Image 1 (cartoon, rainbow, N blue to C red):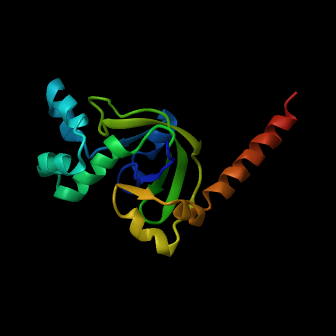
Image 2: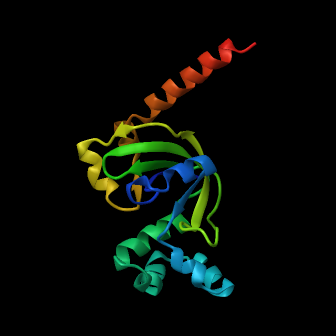
Length: 173
């Protein structure tokens, strides 16, 4: 199994970040139409095995037809348990980083119903997005490379956080 890196926006301007961080999940509004489907239709949508078939069948449920259907496909089928997910606030800031811990699930009656559990390692960060990466922060879901992660300095922020935790632990009896 190969590790992948994903950037997922927790709502426009990170409007859903506080709930995502405190609830240990990442969620999408994009798939809201799935909630309206019957259980059988929903299972069919979740089990489509070809990206092109999925996009063709469901693209009319989105404003930005194909692009949003592809982003939902990524969230439903490409992101896997163990992958690293980065949360952002617009094209300007990275605000969280964590590890995906579940398959997709649907939480009906929620504004952002399509979800995956995430163990958020970093919740209170404010990393500026380098100019050369801003184009990867325009969509809701985007696959990142290891090089992108290096440019965001996620490792350094995590090491600093762990150092602070160790300092705290060393003060406990």
